[in-house]
Length: 497
RNA sequence: GCGCUCUUAGUAUAGUGGUAGAAUCUCGGGUUUCCAACCCAAGGACGCGGGUUCAAUUCCCGCAGGGCGCACCA
Image (cartoon, rainbow, N blue to C red; front, top):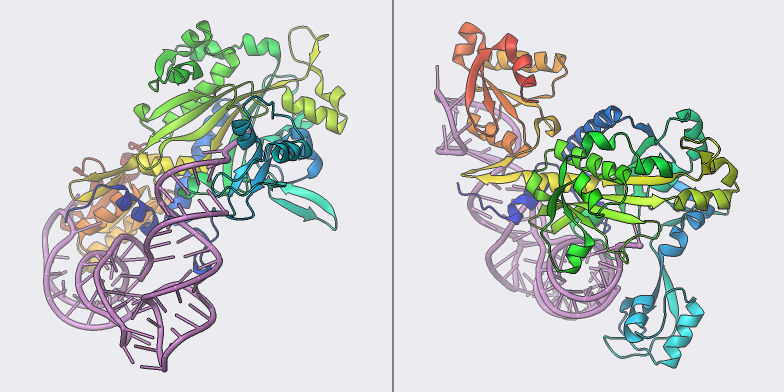
């Protein structure tokens, strides 16, 4: 049977095989921007998280977890309250919603709009008779659109669901600093949900209103940023860098250069920041993304977030959505701790000696590597999706596949073959190898099912198995089979990793 | 959020003013010595609400959700 190699086939696969379902709750028609993961999707996600946690331990990171709800003052200090509430103009006639500041700037290019109050903007609107671009109805009032989800805690405390995990990590700084015993940089990450009330969420799990972030933070001194020991171990690595000056010249082909070269050329300013790019790259390649589907795109100065001094997006090339950001690497400077120090009146505790001279105190700099787990899941599925001849092969890295191995009896109507297969399946489970057992349909069909889930190996018990205690072990990608002793199975499966 | 457009089994679809047809799928049975085979049998759908009508999955309106375009994406 011919399988169409197109995006529709992919989109139905991720539903059919239980990777991604939604928008949830489906039986009630769904709420835009909310999705659920089925068993296969969740297994994949957990495997990604395990890989990250294992590798980050190697890089010396610790993990924390903070509440997803924080009082208003936190977001006032972080700048999110101000920056996440957009001034919008909504048309009384046609209902169009438009960003007030951007539209005003466009209409009045000679006026400085940035920093004006709502009232000042409203005056400008009246004075210049600014009207709806769709239907020409004059605008009147500026309303606010809050990208943060607001809630009440207790009787009357205003709080917000966190729009990023990073800020909640920063609030632990005193504690982390005690914990670190003056070993800098402090390397910490947090995994968890963040919430953004997107105006129109689209593109499956790429822009959800509730999503998972996995954010790494380095708390580091200014001296160490420029003279960073671990940089020397990684500086020879080459990364495809697309800096904003290239983009300005309409070039979209990245320069594949070493981090050392990038520093020398001034494309990157700080060795410690280069190290962050490297960690992002290391984890991405570890997940199995093909090198040629990855690039690093620098934000132009006016694209950067309010806290960022430098920002690069780690992007993956997809068929359906083009380049997709799966990770943002930000130089947040001392912005966050300075703000939280002031608002919480803890500036003294945040002002610490981090360099060689204990008399020189400073507010730590923060370098951040922020992954979106849902985007990793989507891009891994899409880049791994292959239609080969008459089958779908989901080329996930063995370690990430929902099932590690599937065990089949060659035929299902021979009791002793089926029983031996079951025994092998249970034996693998005893070894805590993620085994899946299946008798339904023909042997070929069962292989196909596992190919669609990315299962790296299938073990088949046949007539010979009954005689000589051997089974065949089939490789997902080559479909080649080896005959091996049953006792060697766990060992043989390990080889796939 | 606006405009256009769409929504039928798990998936992808055909079709109709008198409640739906094939494919694939799932389950049971048979057959089968390795890649979606075959045979038998079964299961499963018109997004939600309202209106018009004797009768609405079909026509109209609203809502929700999706796609595309605009806007938004710190």
